[in-house]
Image 1 (tube, rainbow, N blue to C red):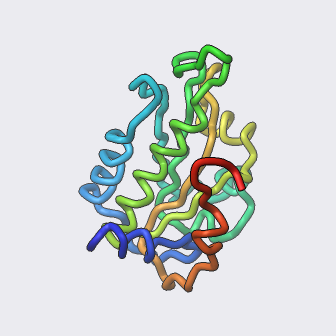
Image 2 (cartoon, one colour):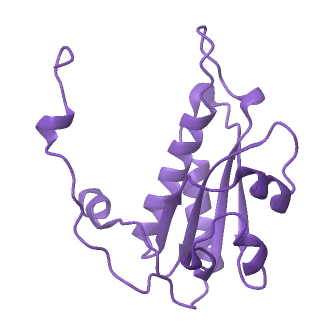
Length: 170
């Protein structure tokens, strides 16, 4: 699939079949994440892969939507701010790096016909407890991963002229 078609067809999937994600597909999307650029090439992140089967009740504490635990896999993308590159002005790029990493993973999943859904409104304390995250590790974003039971609908996006400026703001 062409990249243009891929980014056009990717959508936030909230309905999954019972079909397992193959080890080859999981490895491929994780490898795409591994290849993502990070500030200063610090690679200060970890992905925690959770198989949902048998863990639905405790995983529901992380994010209470029923469809969340219907996906066969949930991936928690975590940053390690102390190991991340920080600008001279004090801006730590952990959130940015993890966002790029997860975007690579999500696009690789879409290319393999898998569904994902970016989730940022979760309970970070529940994630820390359930995944036994050590101090200094920050859960930044989650995604579900599985075979879609639905198909995407057309996306409403602003016109390119509404989001792009040249030479200066405005």
